[in-house]
Length: 191
Ligand code: 5GP
Image (cartoon, protein in one colour):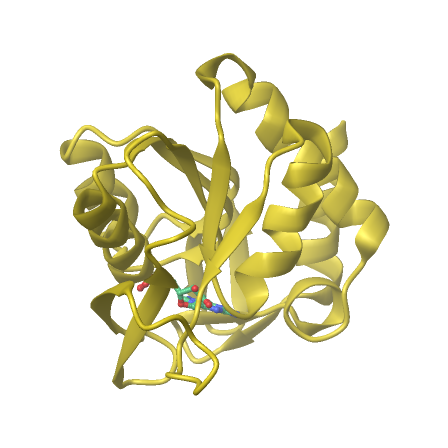
């Protein structure tokens, strides 16, 4: 029922860009439907409730809203990796390289060593899963910090791209709230 709303939003508002990208600016990536995100956050919490999560880790910008919605139920901090080196960033940070699927370039993500530690049990959150590069980058930050990763909670997985299989083959628990089987000729097929 809860996830039905997400599927309906994808069906009614999602726009295919070419055969690979889904634009969901109407409720997730530009304008945000907070009620819908609340439902998604509740569902992510239910799926990972037994995992004693201490931190939700995402990457700016679009993952933040999903992570905050989940944090309302986990009651733990959201840590978002930054994509640009700001002068006010702590000097001690972990960093990794991420190849962007939508922007066709590589960027560096960073988190302060202060906020990610070996006592953390981390749930990685992101809006989309495509080739898995963003999640791999976040996993690398956790490895560097020796934090334990309990899994990844994803809003929309594109099942026709290799990220999900790649991460699951590494033993990572990946939970996606909606899975898209294909985007072809402007038609979005939901699983
Ligand atoms: P990956 O790193 O798994 O290849 O891609 C995931 C990241 O790329 C997400 O953080 C998301 O921001 C962006 N992304 C990948 N595919 C899509 C898509 O179809 N639509 C949108 N809006 N973002 C995407």
